[in-house]
Length: 330
Image (tube, rainbow, N blue to C red; front, side):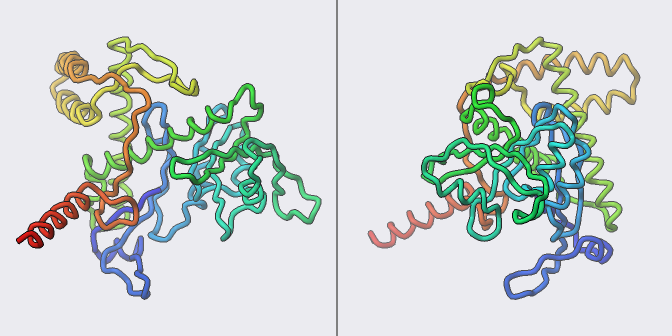
């Protein structure tokens, strides 16, 4: 889920609403909540929901469940787990790997007990569907505990049972693939102008979001065509949880290439064919070998966001510190 900044037109404000600060003061600019079901293996949007500013991401997640196939694996963050969600996914014949909230406020009692047990790292438990004091059916869940680099712990829930077939460390590493949707949101906002809406009506905002999602589908198709055209080999990931292409293509260049192909389509099939061959050569020219174990720190689009300070803030702080030292020296 991500928040979208919208233009401050009356119809847009009425359709999506405006956020409020701690004092209850309403902001002049509206926002929307975009929840996306993303295929991280092909980098494509499967389904999405565009709702009002304070819409529940968990409710939107429930409405996206029917877009999951039997053999799919849903990877979700802490804002989505519920007994109803876990049961619905299992009833569909799909799998899930979800990070569970482990705080004292809300969450699952069973998860907090698992977190407080120092000897518990991999355990199967029963979650009651509605009320633990009744005889309602229970949900069989496997809980996994993983130590974070900062010293804390993360708890994951899954219905992939069997510690020999599905190793705990491999499943915890598999959860990291959820990060691809964060980079996809960044691409859509920074490169493709997801928040630069031109529409003055709420229906137009929905149309622009749908148009960008179709464009992302085209970029994913072109990337797949490039891998097939150059016969890019695949290899197992370090944890042995997924197969990854040995080479990766420049995502921004792929987006630009889609635009060139759409423009060439106006001149006929021969022009598209010639442009396609040229684009394949250019994509291969600027390919990169995938580096195993590489990680990137999370930075926020807004330097004043609640997340880690961005490069902008870090550089600004460094300049301020340097200026202060110079003034003290003088």
